[in-house]
Length: 177
Image 1 (cartoon, rainbow, N blue to C red):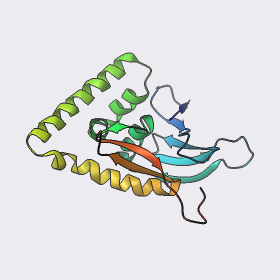
Image 2: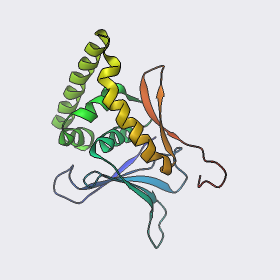
Image 3: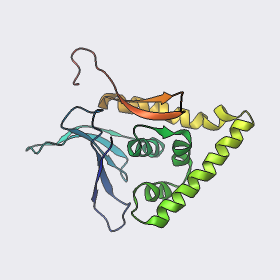
């Protein structure tokens, strides 16, 4: 289960935020994922109070990779194609407001945008263009998988419900897990 903790640094509820995800069962105990939505940086951090640097590792992401990561982190157990597809193509500000704003109207706007992309995917499927419509999504997911691997995280797809999920990767001997 993902548990997000937000540290706001700006007046806007979606600008310059750090978001922490505990991802219990996916990360080693005492670790969390921290995401800077403005600087497009993902970090592995210690949740234990200690002196010194709590950051174990950092990676910069492209905006497209960050869009998918945020959506996966918000729904780590099951993230349908239409949510990922929407997050990839909608304006970044709409995505951030839809995922994080406490404003009900922002959430309603986000759900409306998701519905539009759901219909777009249905239409593509009816025309036999499903793979072509999702090609960019598949490419960015592949790039994101490579960026998440050092964090001990992977992305798998369930053929049963056609949804993606975050998974813990097992390490070979000598790994940090």
